[in-house]
Image (cartoon, rainbow, N blue to C red; front, side, top):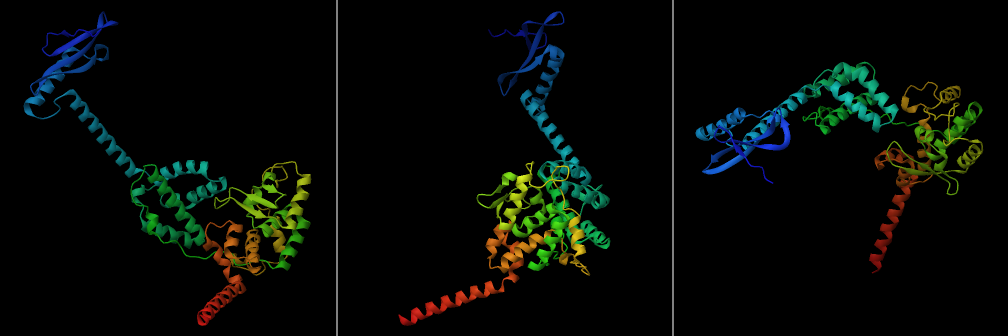
Length: 402
């Protein structure tokens, strides 16, 4: 049943009592106010006495509304008053947020970015980024607000790193990290300005490896590795014959090896594209032999039966003993473990494989990454032109006969 409102001594202020709940010695009262608006009666609810409402407080609100009607300024109803208050509060929060955005520093955002990166990226990558921040970015832009970091400052960072002997690749990595931090800030509504890295030119340097092994060199290397470390030999053979990166080899599980189809399933790759590698007879023999004595899910494990995380230094010692890197100062021409994957691609092209096939077997995300090997296939290109010329000649002959 609807409660009956009781008039107070103050005109326009009324209340009704709670049927059971008391506030003090009296039943709790719910206050309302009643007034004229545009010639019509209007009643609005205020609240309970237990919430702090009194007749005098209600009267004050009623007087304010009537005053607003008389002078034509301010809220004429409680609803309008609440809306104005909400808009003021929203505007206040907006200004506070804008001030907070304007003051947030690179260091503050990097800390948040790194937490997210540790969930999405490999531990090794996060450690590299944390070290890069500690050694360089923290000293140059760490304490600066994002809005104060300019392309000019980043150009100076480039110069400082170059003067300290850092490679173009490392400098590019530093710029990429700054770009990612700014993107994180924008995506999480911590910053709304431009990304200054977009206006900074990356240092140009072709650091792609250009050295690959001959068949004779590969055989010599594999033989030497077999004597020093059979496991390292097997890893090297898989990279040389199937094009796997070191990290992909470390991550191989026996469930990824399909002896029936002679394939190796490669997952969680650098390019985030799973692929299948085709086993050669030598690779299959090596894996079958390892399978017979393996007691772990991983194909390769450390002496503690844990996942391998880096190439053994034995590889470098063997290469040095063979003098493959003797008098070689250009890093692109030095033999390292990754040279085996590069050799695999080079041999594919020289054996007549087209670049599209090489791209798929290597797991390259774009054909541009594979085109670096095109110079190794002059006969393939000449054959393509020969077929083209033959096609033109045959069609020209047909037209003449018709």
